[in-house]
Length: 120
Image 1 (cartoon, helix red, strand yellow):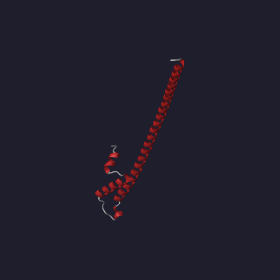
Image 2: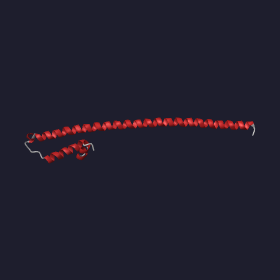
Image 3: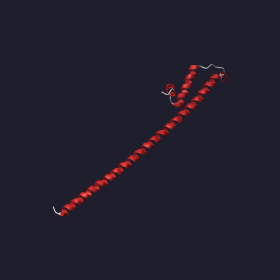
Image 4: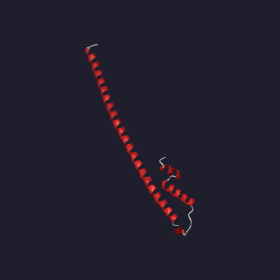
């Protein structure tokens, strides 16, 4: 081999090494960008979950308030039989009515509400 051939081979190897180095830099930059996007997606996910949880809690609080207000109305009407013409209250009917109201307001049955209130 002559010097010109060796020089061309060395030059070609240098170009290959430079291309490998540039590719390594580009890969590292892509990985860095991917990590940043991944963390951004995680943060967005956490934000959405937190916002949804806040909305759920607020919805439950409003439903509970409406339920308490309606139950108080039912109970107060039970205590005022003169307002209904002196009729006695059927306790089983009253309990069933309260449960129907609770289910309509909250979408949950009595067992679910008791379990939620008891922290189960």
